Length: 356
Image (cartoon, rainbow, N blue to C red):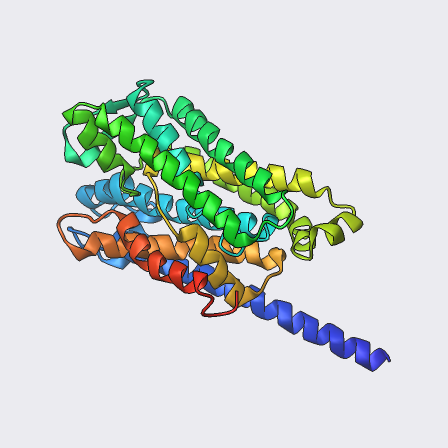
C-alpha cells in the first residue's frame, strides 16, 4: 500500500512539475519576444544594445529615446493587455460554464467601447486631434473608465440574469452576447453619425484596438487593475475549480456560487473596460488563449490562470510585433491581426470540430 501511495505521489509531482515547466518556458520565451519586439521597427536596434539600455547602460541618446519613450511602453502594454483579456476570458468561461465565453463574444468589449466613446464624445473626457498618430487623447481616464465599466457591467448583469434561467444552453448565452454586442455597436454608430468630421475620424481610429497609443501613464493604470484582478482570481482558483464540477457540487463544498459568479464577472468586466477605454477593442484574445492554455496545462485553475496570462501576453505581443513589421513604416492596428486569427478559430469552436 505504501508503495502504491508513493508511486501516486511521485506521478502527481511529475504531472505538476511538467505544468510548471511549461509555464516557466513560456515566461522565458516571452522575455525573448520582448527583446526582439523592442529591437525591431523602422529603426532596427541590435538585441544586445537593447539589453544594455534596459540595464541602465546608455548606448545612444537616440536609441534611449526610442526604447524608453516609444517601444518599451508599447511592448509592456501589449503584455499586460494580453494577460488581462486572457485571464478575463478564463474566468468568464469557468463561472458561466460556457467554453465560448469571452469579453468579445459576450458583447462586454462592445459595451465598454460604447461607454468609452460616449465619454470621449459626449462628456468631453477626450481631446481630438487631426494628427493620425494620436487621434484621441484621453484627458480624464478615470471618468472614461468608469463610464466604460458601467456599460460593460450592464451587459454582465444581463448575461448573469440569463444564466439563471433553467434550460439556458451555452449557445443561447452566446446569442445573448451577440445581441448585446450588436446593440452597443449600433449605439457607437449613432454617436459617429452625429459627430463632426474630426470627431468621426478620431472615434473610428480610436475603436481600432492598438497598443501603440499607450504611454507610461496608461500602462501604469492598466497594469494596476490587471495585476490586482489576477491576484483576486488566483485567490479564488479553488472556487472556480469547484464551479467547473457544477453549481450543486460547488454549493456542497461550501462555495457561494452566486457571489463568486457576480464578483468574478464584475472584476473581469473592469479589466475589459479599462483595456478598451485606453486601447480600443482587441477581439478574440480572451477566447483563444484560455483554450490554448487548457491544451497545455489542463483545466486546473491553479495552473490555468497563470498559463493563460503567459499565453495571452505572448499572443498579443507577437501579434503587435508582426503588425509593426508588415507594412513598414506604417503600423497595422493589432486588433486586425487578432481578428484574422480569432474569426476562423471561433467558427471552429462553434462547429464543434474538436472537444473543448
